[in-house]
Image 1 (cartoon, rainbow, N blue to C red):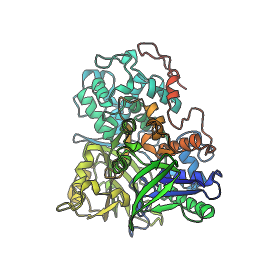
Image 2: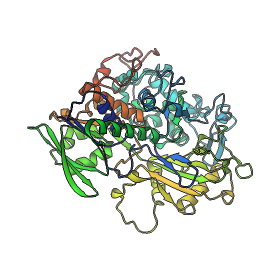
Image 3: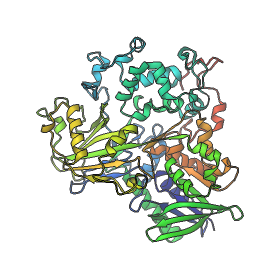
Image 4: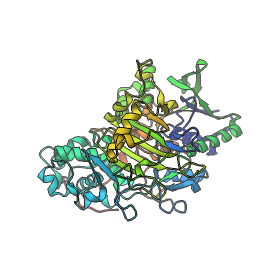
Amino acid sequence: MTSYAIAGAGPAGLYTAYRLLQSGNLQPGDTVALLEWSPTRVGGRINTYTFPSASGQYVETGGMRFSADTNFPGQIENGHIFVQNLIVEMGLASNVVPFFMSNLGPDTGSGRLYYLRGVSFFENQVANGTVKLPYNFDPAFIAKGYDKMVAEDVFGALANGFAPGSSAGWNRAQWCTYFGAGAVPGPEGTAAFPAGTNIGDIGYWNLLYDQLGDEGFDYVTDANGFASNTINWNSADAMQSNTEFGDGSSYYRLQGGYSTLFEALRQKIAALGQKQQGYDPLFLGERLTRFNYDSNSATFELHLVNSQGRHSVTCDHLFLAMPRQSLELLAAGCSPYNVLNDPTVKLYLESAMNQPSYKVAMLFDQPWWLDPGIAAWRPNLSPEGSGGPTMTDLPLRQVYYFGNDASEKPSGGPYVLLATYDDMQFVTFWQEMETTGNDTVAGSLDYQPLTGPTQLDPAGSMSRILLSQLAAVHGAAVEAVPLPTQIVFQDWGRNPFGAGYHGWAPHYNICSVMDGIRSPGTLAGQPMSLYVIGSCYSIDQAWVEGALCTAESVLTEFFGLPPFCAVPEGYNLICTLADTERPLPGPCSGDGTATPSGT
C-alpha cells in the first residue's frame, strides 16, 4: 500500500489529487490525502466572493481570468492549454465568456482611461498625439517614438530589440531557450550592459532606466498598472511576461466565478476518494508545521495542527503545493538539517521574488462612473458595463468595472467596482486602514488570505480614501460620488502566501531552477519522493496555468502518469537545462547579435 500526501489545496494541489485518483495507477489500499490549512475553502489564490444579499453579485478577489483559444471549446491550441482542458473535463465549457478589456481596438472605441500626474486622457489620445504625456522625457525616448506609445507597447518594443524575433510569437520552448541563453544583441548594447551580456544577469529596473531614462522609467511604471512589472526582476523573464498583455491575447473568465472550477474539482476528488478509499481525501483546517524524512523506511512523518490540536501522519510521497513564503514558513518549523534548509535548496527557493498584491471591491446601487452628471471622464466599457482597467499612478493603481453580473440578473443594480488592484509598495498604503486602534495580532500571524476577503465599513477610512481617488480619476466631485453599500478587501501579501504572484530574480538560470526545484531532495543530494509544485516556480508565475503545468510535469516525469491532454509542439510544461542547449530562435554571433526568425 502506498500513501500520497499533498499539502496545499490550491490549483496545483487539487489538480494533483484529481490526477492521481483518476489515473488508474493506484492500487487497492493506496491512499491520497489533500491537506489544506484554510478551514473553509480551497483554491489558493483563486477566491470568488459573493456579496451578501446582493442577488448573487460576485467579484474575483484573487485570480480572475485566463487566456484561451478563440475557437474554444472546439479547438484548444492556443492560450492556457491545461486550464482550458480542465474546464472541459469539469463540464464548465458553456460557462466560459470573454473577459472584456478596454484596450484600443476595432471594437473598443477610445481605449482605456488613464489618470497620470493629475492628467486624464484616453488611450487613443496617446497613439494619435492629441495628448502630451505629463513627463519630461529624454530626447532619446522621444526619438524612438515611445512618447506616442502606451506602456505595454514600450515593453514590446524593448522585447523586439532584446529578444529579436519574439514579436512573431515565440512558443514556450523558444522562450525557455532565451531564459537560459539570451544575450544583449549588438544594437542594444550600452556602456552599462554591453552586447553579449547575459539577459538573466540584468535587473529589469536597471535595464529600463538605462534604456528609457528616469522619466521614461517613471512613465512605464505608472502607466502599466503593475509596479511588479518594472521592479528589478530577471530581464529575460520580463521580456516574455511583459508582452503577454500587449500581444493580442484573448482573455476569458468563468461565468459564476473562477472558484467554480476548483469547487467542481473538489467535488470530483471527493467522489473518487469515496469510491476508491472510502472517504473524502480533502482535510480542511490542517496546517503542516514540519516534516521529517526517514531514509531507512523512505517515509515522511508529517506534523500537523488543526482545531483539535497537534497530530502526525506518515506517507510515502509528499507534494508541497506551496509558494515561496509558505515553503519558508514550513522550513522554519523543520530541523536545520531538513532538506528545505539545505543551502542549495534555499538558493533555489529564493529565486522567486514575492510580489504582494491587493484588491478592494465595492458594491454600488448605481454605476455612477457612467453618469455624465457625476463623472466627466467615463471609462470605455462593454454593453454589459464591464471593462478596464483604468490606469492611474495613485495608490489604487488599477480600476476594473464588472457592472451587473449577478446570477439572478435583476434589473438595475447592484454594480461591482474593483476599486483598486495594486501590488508591491502600494499594498502598504491600504494595509494601515485594514483595522482601527492598536493591533491585537502580529502582522506575521495575520492569515487573512486563508479566510478572506474581509468586509469593511462602507463609510470607513479605506472607503473614504478610495472614493476621493476614484473621484479624481473620473473627474467627479467627491461629494457627488455615493457611498458603496458594501466594501471588501483581500490582502495577498499576508502570510502564508506572502504574494499574489511571483517573478524570477536576476542572476539565476531560470531553466535550471525550474527543473531542479521540483525535486528538492535531489538538489540536496538526499533523494526522496518530495516534490514542489505550483505557479511560483513556473513559466506562468501569475497564472493558474503555471500551477497545473508544474504539477503535470511531476506526475508524468516522476510517476509515469499518461498526459492529461494533448499539447501543441513547443508547449513546454516547464523549462529544463536541455532547453539551454538548443540554439536561440535567431542565429546569434559571439557579440550577441541575432537575426529574427519567428516561429
